[in-house]
Image 1 (cartoon, rainbow, N blue to C red):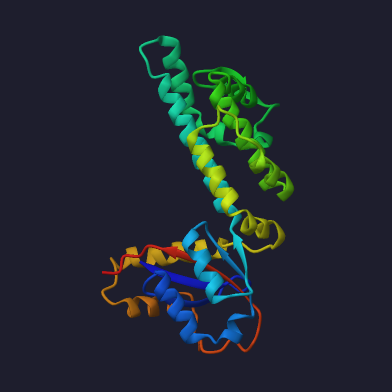
Image 2: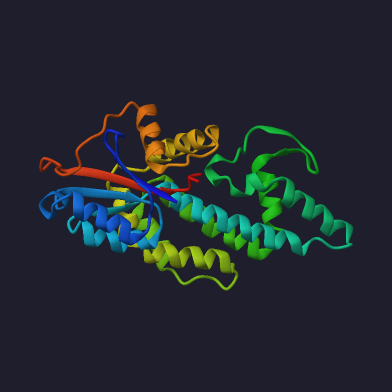
Amino acid sequence: MAFEYINTETGDILDILEARTSRVIKNHFIANYSLNDRRHAKTITIDMNASYVHVIQEIFPRAEIIIDRFHLVQLINRSMNKTRVKIMNRFKTSNREDMKKYRRLKRYWKLILKSERKRSSTNDKYYSLFGQRLEKSIVEEMLNYDPELKANDELYQRLLKAIDMNLFKGLESVLKERSSSLISSHMRTSLKTLRKHLPYIKNSFTYPYNNGRMEGISNKIKVLSKVAYGYRNFYNYKKRIMIHFKFKAIETKSLNNKQLNICWLKFLTNVT
């Protein structure tokens, strides 16, 4: 396991730690940054790891926590897909019509997860198992196979629309509504998670920061580890990362009292 954090505005790697436990992270920041410096951190952008929230509040008492919007979409996307799979499996019977529905739901899963606004309603083309059809009409037919699937899709689309159009009030109102009895357990769990992180989700609608750069850097670091078949020594691995990104070693004892926007994310490495 390893942990890295970067400056969100510049994309510069600030440091890489050997472990990502709360104790290691807390000790690192307290040892290398004074309380006065840590108070100048303006925002911290993270994924939906609940353990990070408590650590950040202790280390950076004045920083606004931002939940990256990509992880919001990913959460509801996975929940909707699990719901589709559960309902799809109900049609896996000896009945011919049911099997047709099963194959359609299995083959065109991407269309169900697609945003309603992006489903084509003008250009028809040939679809296997359907024939010459419009994309929108295909999705509507599949959603009518089961009322639970349709109800979950309506909720899923409302959440997607609020996030895509930067409408926090719309997202908040959907989350505060009483869920229908047709809503799946997967979606209910996602709604509960979103409600729990609502104050930090609101910040993602206010600030322009995200951890896209972090994701890109993490992917490159993983590739470096794979190409080298792992590193025996973590510090050699860390130096190799810094060389790759052409970053010089920096002093971490002082931030010169400048406001920083920090983004951090956990990632797995093959350190042996």
